[in-house]
Image (cartoon, rainbow, N blue to C red):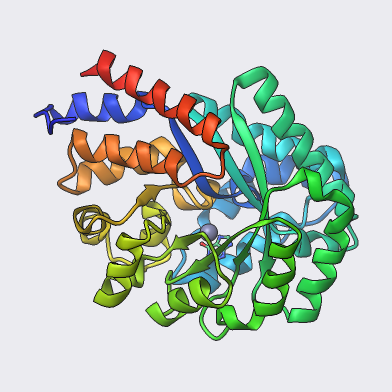
Length: 345
Ligand code: HPA
Ligand code: ZN
C-alpha cells in the first residue's frame, strides 16, 4: 500500500474502521468504575471508595506499582461466574464498537483464587463470554492465563495445576504484575511445563524493566511475543533480533503514558519501532484505567506521532500476524483487512 496523504480526519476514520486484533488486554483492567460499584453492591463487598467519581479520581498513577495496587482492589468485587461473564461481555461490546475482530484476553487467576474464588468460576465465566462474542458479535476470542510475577514459583505451579482440567478453554500463558525485581527466569520451569502442555507463551518484558528481561523472556521462557517491550530500542542487538525473527511486541501507548514510562504520547517510540521493522501492534492494556479502549489508543497515538495510512495498515496487519489465530483464520482476517483498505482508500 502506498503512503497516501490523508487529512488527520480521514486518517482517524480509516484507523477507527479498520478490522483489527487486540492482543494485550487484561480483562480485569476493563472493569469500569460503574461496574465495580454495581458488582460490589450485588456481592456485598465493601471497597474503600465513596463513589464512582472518588474511585476515578484515584486513577493518577506514577508508575506500574501505583496502578497495580488500585487494579487489585478493583478486582476484589469479582466473586461469581456471572461476574466474570459480565466483565468480559462489557469488554466485547466495546471491542465490537472499535472493529476488533479477534481478541486474546489476559486473565489473572491468582488475583481471584487467593481470595477463595474457584478457578472454575473465573475461567467458565470468561469462556462463556468468549463463546458468546464469537456467536453474537463475530469476534474470535481466546484466553491467556497470566501468572503474577510478584508471587513465587510455587504459586504459579499450583495455578498451572488448577488450570489443567480446563486446558481446552485457554490457549496460552503469560506473565504480568510488578516487573522490576521479578525477572522472567523466576518462572523458567513453570513456562517449560506449560509449553509441554501445548500452551502458547507470552510475557510482559521491557515495560519498566531492562532489555535484559526481554532477552530472558525469549531465551529462557521461550515466549513467542513480548508484551510492551518498549525498552527494546535501548539495545540495538535486541532490535536486530526482534526484526530478524519477526518477534511481535504488543505495545500499549496510553498505558505507557499513564504509568509514566513516557512523559507524553509525542515522546512514544512506536514510530521508531515501525521504522526499524519491528512487528509492533497497538493495544489497550487496562482500558478502564488508562483512558480508553483500542480505537482511543489508535486515535490519540496517530494524532501525536507522524504516523500515516501505511503505518495504520501495517499495525492492523501486524495484529493479525502476531495473533494465535490458526493460519486459516489469519488468512480470512487479513483478507477482510485488505478489502476494507481497498474500499476506504
Ligand atoms: N503491566 C504489568 N502487569 C499488569 C499490567 C501491566 O501493564 N496491567 C495489568 N497487569
Ligand atoms: Zn499488560
